[in-house]
Length: 247
Image 1 (cartoon, rainbow, N blue to C red):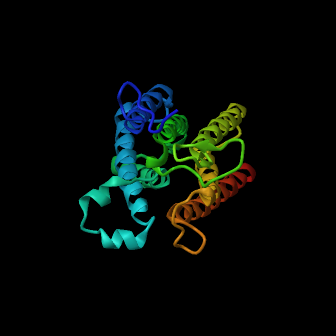
Image 2 (image 1 turned 180 degrees about the vertical axis):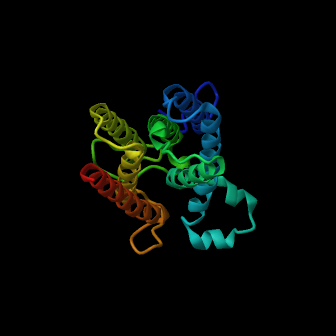
Image 3 (image 1 turned 135 degrees about the vertical axis):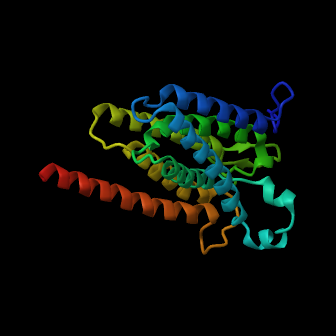
């Protein structure tokens, strides 16, 4: 296999990123809880998530190499060329909350996004893998049996495939938990974010990206903040549920 692996003459990153957005949105429309939020308000939530994700993914990318970003602060090409999934997730979360304030919606909408997000992210990571070295999402050199040569003779951790596998297992576990119906509204999304951010915190230790923040990179710092927030939020919800139970 040669990287990038073009499909019908289309660059894999462009093809699979487009498919990720299209299929993820269709999954959302098909699987969302119709009783939780009407379609007109749901579309506003999607708009907020999309805009927030686009901005968040760029902002976090600019902190990958702060020195380089400062040197190229006036280069539109540099500022527009990169993005991060973690930044997109956290930015999308903020965008959703702003949209809910705008439309006056107070109920949690996160659970409806778990499957669409996971499906979209897995499809997108296929494109990252098939792009090879140009995508900069691979891991460091390894002697593991999972190592992949992306074209330069060096076997590296295929962290894109690790992420696809992790997301698949995570979604199966979360929806198994959903069937038992012992959670509160929003818990599935909270656990999805908590587990994914923990995964990214750990997996980025085997990625050859700059780590300018002590031993961490920009994504890991964002993950730590997100993990702290979701631990606090889940503990808060558990306390509220216990109080309601014994009230």
